[in-house]
Amino acid sequence: MKNDFMVAINQVCHERQLPVEVVLEAVEVALVSAYKRNYGGNSISAKIDQETGELSIFAEKEVVEEVLDPKNEISLEEARQIDPDVDYGDVVQVESTPADFGRIAAQTTKQVILQRIREAERDALYRSYAEREGEIVHGTVQKVDQHQVTLSLGKVEAYLPRSEQIPTERYSEGQRLRAYVSQVNKTPRGPQIIVSRTHRNFLRRLLEVEVPEIYNGTVEVKAIAREAGYRSKVAVAALQEGVDPVGSCVGMRGVRIQSIVNELNGEKIDVAEWSPLMTKFIANALSPAKVLNVILLDAITGDKTAMVVVPDKQLSLAIGKEGQNARLAAKLTGWRIDIKSAMEAAREALERVSASEEIKARVSHRPEVFSLTSAILSEREDGSELSGGELNLLGEAIELIMQAELAIAREKQEAERAARLQAIAEESKDLLAEAEAILSGEAPAAEGEESAPETEPAAEVEPEVEAPAETVEAVAETDAAAETEPAPVETEETAPAVEPVAEAEPEPVAAEAETPAEEEAPAPPEGELTSVLESVVAPKKPKKKTKKRLKAMVVEDEADLDLDSLIGGKKKPKPKRRAPKLDDTLHRVTGKRRRKGEDEWDEFDELEY
Image (tube, rainbow, N blue to C red; front, side, top):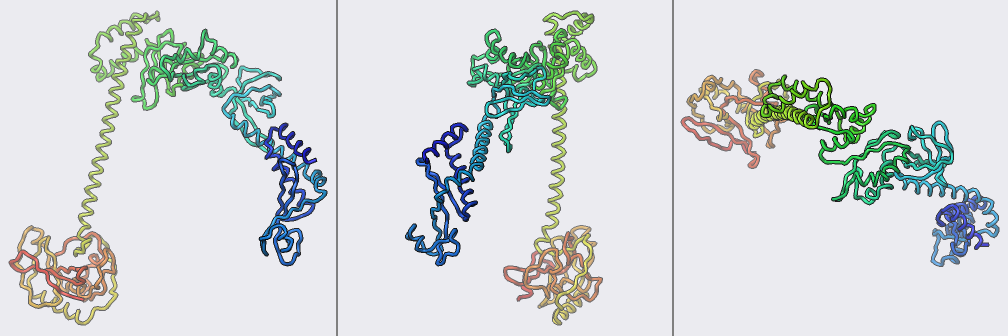
């Protein structure tokens, strides 16, 4: 009986083309579902021996002292019969296969097994056709309706939408077709396969099938432009020397290309040789028309535009029916193609030369070409056919004029580019100079030197600490001494000095005028604010641009208080007699002063803390 069970499993796998493991997994899941429905339990697992086909159900039970739930719990004595090393709280697997489980399982798990097998079959079909996306499949027309054609691919159906059908084809039931798998979607009802007969890669795959050189990589298909059902153009290139790419695709007497034309219901196919030189590639793409000149006008128009000159008798062939040949050539090359006849292009070129002195100067070294061109244009006004020599002469004149125009356009572009770069350089210089000026103006402030801002708005500063009485007395004595002394005139390098502990009266400094601006510099006001600030300054380094630089101050006259100098910002030199300096390394304030008749600065300790 068990052997018969495995025989049945193997037969299902063979018919459905499914792995044995997938079917056995589906059966095990169905057995677990059937056991839970009939007997209950939380952690149930099923196992099938692939050799004997024996079914086993295992239930996980917890080892407890007192069994209250026999379906999920087991005593220690029973558990140690299964595993001698278990203890309370451990979980053991106990075989719980019922005696009549075969009949119950057959009734309960039938639909579950079938459902899982169908799902596995759909997944297998999806994977197989997803790998074939981008390839050609053979199918039989099974149904034809207004919107799509249904193809039978064996175990699965494919759909050929109306947009993917060749307009010139008519389909009938039972007809054999080759189609390109463009899309494979996974749905609950199985894989949805969309095929196409208008895709350009369909032509690529047909070429790989019919041309061995393309299949083995000797010839490469560079580009394809296709209007399904009417005409296609293929650009091919040889990857091996000595191989003719066009001849390989066409075949002996056109046998290879003709089989593809028959498959596409008479669609015309032009095979052109690809070239890295764009002018040659565009000329080849316009085959079978003969091309005289190809001029790339990207330097003039700013986009990918090419002007093609063809003989007057070849103009209609180059354009094609309803512009089809020119349109496909533009798709194949990626360039916009403007086709003109030789007479028309030569006449327009001569008109541009006569209207522009700059062009005339550039082509003046070949006057004979333009005189002969003018004579030909005057003689052939009746529309008579031009000879080969006359066509070559017209082509040469057109080439000279167009190259002159392109050179002028490139020179203008270079001049505009150079002007833009010059403007950017000048602007960068201005920005750099401005940045240097800003940095040079802020450098003294960063070093802690005294200066007052020019445009900084006055801010209200409140003292945080009251000055001691000794400080006030020192300020008064300093102000009195300032009234009796003549005001010194300082240079730009001179900075005011502070002498809180005066050991000797400073001698007056003679006025030494270096510049007219320094002679007109006013004397510092009475009640020097700097002396007050230096007498009560905190021992830590003051911060830039903040009112917390002042620990305390005493102001007797608000008119003498310059709040801008307290806030910080852009600073200007102010003539003062004393210049305080905070030494961070020695933790003391030093002062500098200039003595009469001396050019050197003397440094001495003023305050220590």
